[in-house]
Length: 537
Figure: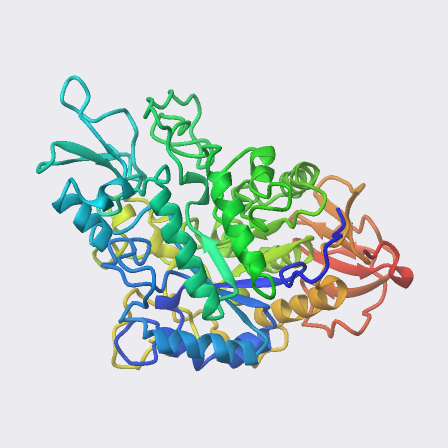
């Protein structure tokens, strides 16, 4: 795959997902905030990322920590003010960083004025903004749809005698995208933020906007997994409806009106690569769509290589793939993929940094942060509060960034209790790793620098290379990458050229060659520059 469209800043870029409440607390209330981001832009600039995606910043009752929006044109008072967000956008720009907001168009909070009016006055113009339905013949819910907790996705409104739909918590009623008024509202919301300098949006539940007009029952599901459905039902009629693509075509037209242009990044929970490709359209819908098959792959060469090959084969020629290993829902790559093994963390970062398209890091990935076993009494996430297994609750991946080795991790003042517990005090934080040239943090920085130097601003050409069992080898742009996914040293599949970077190295300067390599250490990956840049796109 090779890019034929110039000027799109996310091509070859690295985005940094920043969970605002857990990054840095600037006012001593135990919650991270916009002030904490502004005060630490130098760190992000030093790391070398191209843009930051902020978790929801809009006003919310926080039943789902910002994913239940009560005002699409404001800032949550616990996080700051609209002026703070304007300042962040301006100062980030001075650091060469673009700011993406999290936009939640599938549902609102039940406290949103639209829903309050819709519920209080069934004749209100806002009634059509939401999905309402009469009871079934037996008086029960209109169909068999289940929400994200496995409970009935319908709640009875006693006043009107109708049910309203919520694919998440009952406090998150779904919007009715069959209504032209909802379309009009969001076109204005996009313009509001684009006019303030926002570089784009990560679009929550991009795959779920439209629901079946007939509200048909979902069919049974033979085998459950996160991408095909859970709780015994295939979400055929309440997600991935074809009408959603028209929304993104309309939004893309607006995005293209602004200089840049502005970026639309979709949360697209699909397991089929051709369906994933549909979200790009004919270069007229989303510019980026999250690849969840890659996220949920096992950390092995064959699985990852197979998904990369299938993705690139399915995407349109000019589509930009996007790769990540962690986020606020699925957990941290250091735990999910790597089991806390630093060698594997280093290899995972090398792989992410050398795949074509756009790479996304979750805050803490750069220092190898792992999930935290948050005790039940300290959990905050209502969506997964009743899940007993530590890997089932989402709080595990939302704990504060560790900035130093103090009890508070440098996240907040020493005498303040953070909103979620800080990870193990024995874990090295940003300060300690910045002082250690051989740390995971320095490796991550060097990988980002190498990525920008080798194929920033473009979608580098990718070709898988023959490799023995346990290894994955590929060419990307002018580089060859060889990775050993075993616990034993191995003869390097491609022992030629000069090593640019090794995942096991002590942070070698990307501009300095380290000499040819004949063997790879356990869970080691190397980046080799091809002679005179052969294969560079």
